[in-house]
Length: 555
Image 1 (tube, helix red, strand yellow):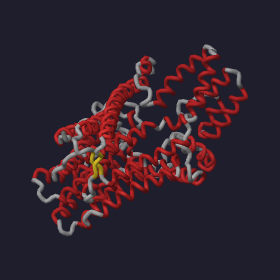
Image 2 (cartoon, one colour):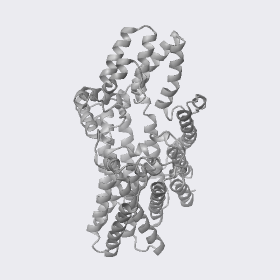
Image 3 (cartoon, helix red, strand yellow):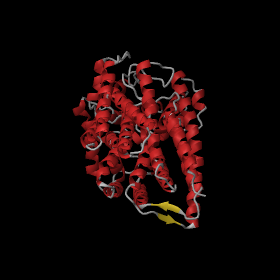
Image 4 (cartoon, one colour):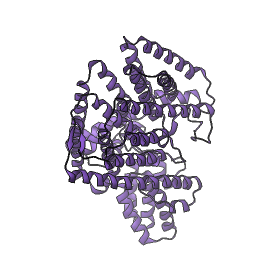
């Protein structure tokens, strides 16, 4: 039995209309620390499992891009051979996401698609964009803290994503998809056209409110492209120009009454901050190990050490204190995996470029433009880690673009392979669903603990992996304090050994401070002194802490 398009669309509709907009109180962060990502991931695993469960006798369909995707996965796994065990293990969730994303791509190929199938998928993306845009307007103008808990002092809407740049790239993607449909599909109903124009208005309006460099640049690219190329479709060009003028007027005329001053809001959109230093230090690290890289899970510690060298020239500040990603996806993979991962990405990009080249000339630019907002964002931040919906939308758009190239379908008919993939998707569905649901519960417990400092919430955590670093530091800090107060030497030695292993994967100024305290309590003064020297070198901005031995509230 072939996968029912209705079942597929139903689950995808649930993702785009409910799951990705789900909000629950949390302490911020990325990935499964954010509840909407957890529930979106669970439904995505259900979607993939359903697709492969119903494979018919003809076998598993794949295209030329699928081959490139397989080689990509194999190549990026190779650096695990020379990665340290614990740092490499800490990156396992990243590779599970890649596997699930690849299976999602394949699941899209298993459907006997009609001409309207991909149109429905594109319309779902625009619907998700519109919902997020309207929720953001609600945040921005109604200033409520009871729904989608908006920080009035922030000054910019951020939707469920809790980060305005992530919101902006999602909305501009929705705009690009809307304009693509309007320019390419001639038999649209009046209601669909009105819906797409309305989404375009909201997307432009909210993107302007985000005051995001990513949003401004990609918004400008998308709008200018359609204004300059729609020679035959003058109605679309005129309407788009009108929407730009109307949305700009709404963005700058309607009053904002939040608590952030204008200077703070403008600063967020114009100041590059420490980003240039992150890129500079990352490139210097790559030049030191350009072939094999530093191994998976090593980026934060590697950057911390490199940025410490430059700290004296930067007002005695190590800019890598909390930078676990270089804000460029390609640099991230290259630094950790070496030239092998660079080859893997070049292979994937080449396969995509080849497929775009084999589409009709007049549509190539529009197809590429569908990916531009997210592709550009990947070069300056980490949207796939902040937002799983970005990842899902990107996969769907990849499948749509490749479907336009006329790529020949192939089939895997081996019963053993088909059974193996079915078992794999079943295992992934069970593990991902349990993991995701427990991650939502964990996120809530961490939030309650931070808010109340009641240790019972940490004891109630059932998934310590979803927010591994924060949970470990929060839970161990209490144990460390108790061990110091009771002078429990056995426990202190155990905790010092634990901190050595933990810091090798997850750098933390606070944990290093606690380690110094434990060494002093054990009477290991030379080790404590040496640890203090390391702390001063890695975190010179906390010099008062290292000199006084007291953790300050403002740190």
